[in-house]
Image 1 (tube, rainbow, N blue to C red):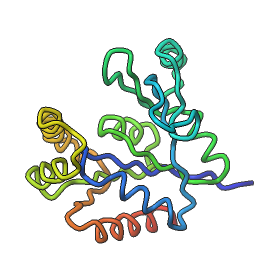
Image 2: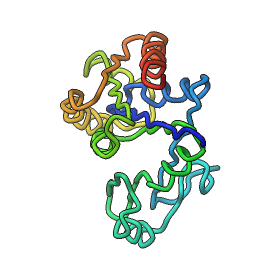
Image 3: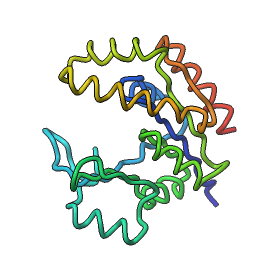
Length: 189
């Protein structure tokens, strides 16, 4: 019988470097597979169904909510939903792989609550709000208003750090990746 995989949850305020850390870990030998989220927004650019996201209509998304098909979900804007499907976790863990999530803090807390000790939740924290502001400005993808909105949300999200198993402070990316690798090594043994 194949050994079932475990769950690794990464959450962080926008701009903390969480996605960069997750991408680095996916290249390592941890038997990780990324949990593809579902969304009701339209594909952007080259995005493909079941590769970047499972693209659903708002009606299909709401139907799946009624069916309890999501571990966690959120309506980010009117009729724009994002969520983690239970079927993704089953597909990946039944194959013996470990699932890695890159989700918002509330989603991360909810997934951890449901899976307990079979999940490791890691909060990636920026060294400071000032450093986060600098990163968001240097990223040059958002308007000043959007950056202010993200910073306000980040301050709120930082309050969730204590609800996670581990906190990785991303002051130096290489060190943060190494710390995350050590956490995964210990958890997956």
